[in-house]
Length: 112
View 1 (cartoon, rainbow, N blue to C red):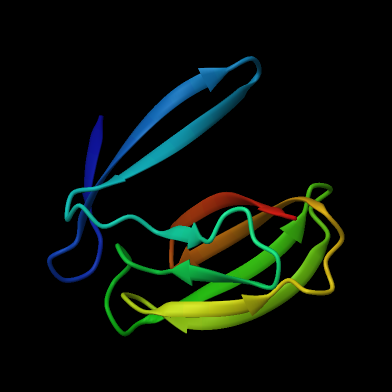
View 2 (view 1 turned 90 degrees about the horizontal axis):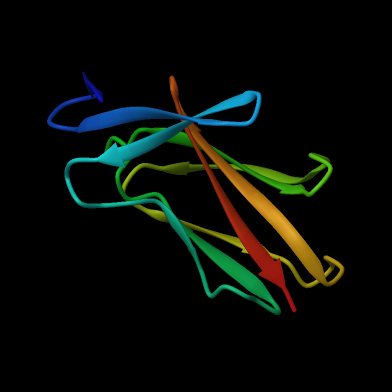
């Protein structure tokens, strides 16, 4: 596992796991905070937690369908939350990509 410094006081570990042909990197934030989405599944809106990212620094947040089509794009701040309305989304599976500089996190959520 490779340890890297990311921002002031934030350290994370990268581990690569092979799945078929694709290599997947998993990020483990050493500060115990992990970005996430709640409620999941959701009906009206999701709250995207940007914990684990460098505090008060911009984080690009994108909601995507399973084909990778962009549903919504916004910006939040590390350590804060972003609210995304999913009322107009059809029932199904979606993804949220969060990116701050070279760190990307992808989370899945369901629309009921």
